[in-house]
Image (cartoon, rainbow, N blue to C red; front, side, top):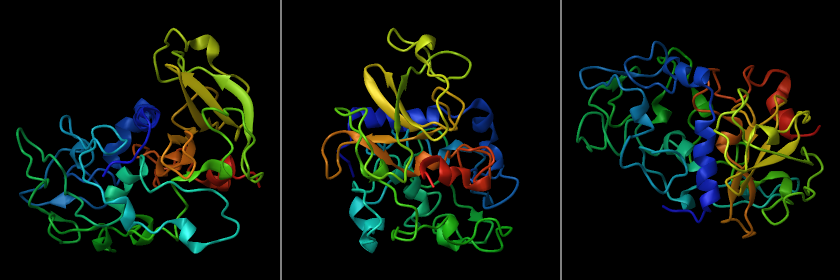
Length: 315
């Protein structure tokens, strides 16, 4: 499956994971995203076929899925047509256009839509092993690793991974909408300072900034993006964008300044109803898969005080 997403979006997909802080990256071993035998708590493999490799369940050094806008992705993905989108509910308050389910969200759903076993990967662990399965062990709930779907998780998994929070299925009508225009549209690469259509969302502020090399940023400076371009004093919840290597990227600032792993990235897509490249909301807008908090939310305190919601929704 390939989506007609611009090279800008491919960069943005990689940028999100690359931007995670070293602290967050190091802590993934203690989260439910670690499905190896080294996971101290939650759902993990057991038995002779289990693996000690942590990253293999999502990433592979070589031969990653090129149809996915996530770095060296080690999983197959479902066809976009299998998903029922939020717009199918025909709610009058939902005024954004949707692109096909894709971009970085399709990578998240390659586990969370429950259509394939959790250890169904492109390249298994070990040299030259493309067996499409990690191992022949079992999961903590006793199911075979080759048939264990996310829907198999139950209270025997220490009660931490149950229900729709991890098993979304392919019917996404009861989940936060993804692959939708942010705030109903209004921003694009040709209208970088447009007025967003839905006033109930954080609006563009007119501030631009670089993606510099200061301690508060996560990328080296270039000839056009240096520390002097990093924005300061941007209000929390403001939609901003920075220019990197001649391309624009939007994000909702959460108050630190400059682009951070704790900010909410928007993903540039051209495969929606409006062909002009514009920012979309995806799974990784709110979630960082390497985060150490229990729901992998980008804010360190999770959704305390509904701050995740209120970062975008101006209520």
